[in-house]
Image (cartoon, rainbow, N blue to C red; front, top):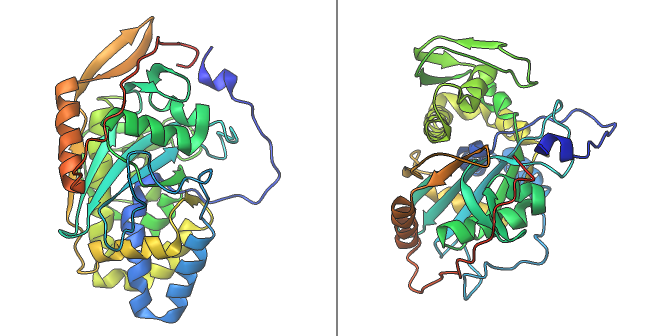
Length: 343
């Protein structure tokens, strides 16, 4: 049975929430905290917004792959960004899949960031249920905790923190910046934020996009695949960061912080998040993007992205080196039979 039929729709009467696409959190955190240099008001606003987003992850103090609790002020750390497919038109309550996953490793000494996109259809082992299926189902089965465990199992590195957001309010951030300049690879027609079909139509070429248009570019994969979509999302990160750190955008910081609202959930405290500012306060984010190679595959009629084992090992070693891990954190690679209860 398809996932959508298994979701229990939860109808709530509540004020419409602005929504934020997950991958914006890196530049937004840097912007919000650096805003402290422009006045106490902005700093206090950032403190309130991010403190209200804190959520204890079932008493988890550290990754099972760590011997000690990390401190981002002095340690290399990793952050998993989880974008879920919830929206006003997709009200699935807690039973959402992750629409996108990115894992960032941060090297404190070098002040560098490596960011790997994890295709949503990757065929991996999910410890929560004990068998292999699409990685985006982990969140459906057990929320951020199950997603973290699955990513640790797949990449064989500790996940220290997570940041979860739902789809869209990144449109507000881009609109607050008066748009971003990106290169659209091909002509496309895509849904808008509320899933209206073909509502957004873009021509190929370098151009300035507003929030809705940038969202459409970030979401589309009709003419390629998750790997290319991940690369486009990474380019959008860079475009947002470039625009956000420009002198002309300082006056927009209030609106950017407001755009986050109550849409972020994380196990990072405000003080821990403040430590991330050291990675971009010079106006430049030293960010290297990585991808997970693989190939299209079908198992019992269901589409999957089969990861290339050799490339997966190479990416894992790159991230371990970046985190400067000195010990072997490998987990038992127990495998289970595939269950096609979710598609």
